Amino acid sequence: MNILYLIGNGFDINIGLKTRYKDFYDYYLSLDPTADNDQVKKLKSHLKAKLSSEDKYWSDLEVALGNYTTNFSSLEELELAYNDLNDKFRDFILAVDNNKLDLSNFNIEKLRNSLAHPENCFCRDERDRLLKFYGNWGSSDCDVKVISFNYTSTFEQLLNYQNSSIRLGIGAHHSSCAINLSKIIHIHGKSDIPLIGLNDKSQIANADLREVIEVQEYLLKPLLNKMQGHRIDSDTLQYIKNADVICVYGLSLGRTDGMWWDAIAQTLLSKEAKLLYYAYDDEIPPYRVQWINRMKRRWKETFLNSTQLTEEEKKRITNKIFVVNRPTVFDICVD
Image (tube, rainbow, N blue to C red):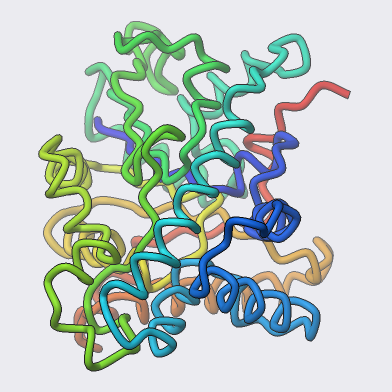
């Protein structure tokens, strides 16, 4: 059986890292502006105004960047602003990543067990359904892969991952079944080369620049990956296609990563795979079962509406999606 995790910034935030976009904005706007060019000055002025008014416009840096392109009249103007923003973001995330984790502050065994057994954080009924599904593989070994949407090396540090397989545990049905972590992949690059951008050209708001190939090479993440020639994106698409259980943690279902939601949806359509989505809705108390059920339905709809599926196709896969709210699965900080 193949288990695939898609891990987002919620993981890093949960273990105490200051990696929210708000943290970066505070850093970016605090830098010495002496050498700023005109485009950078305009960008920072715009950003300050939006943040001071508590506008949600910049809550997602990538979406906001696509919308902000209406302020550029040429490729050269975009380059001046984008290069400064990207370079400063690289400096910011490198500093975070270079501040190595103190492993004594974390329950590493819980992390390993959580990766090996994603079913454990679900209610008994859902857990039993997942375990029954696992039974299709008998006593065969289980392969786990992590696709990190983060730039930091937190998973590598926590698990002492050195590009070789790690034993995580044994199977739920058979003690002879090994569960191994085989890969950790950073789909948006690591802290030394972070990729910031959009899913496709429709998200470039400036219609005059949208079709300019050089603009697309700055802003479209699929092109940015392709230009590096590492084929990580094509590998990831294959891993999603091969997955039997896909777990999404710490990721909002944003449209700048729409290609991955479409890929997951196609996997669910093509075979008996399961999607496990870890949601966080702090407003729902655990004793409001009606609200919890409503929340699960809402997150399923959010995922389905983030894809290009037809209404009939959405109906076919909705029962393959499991949602849990506020799971403690990766709460690994030691008090």
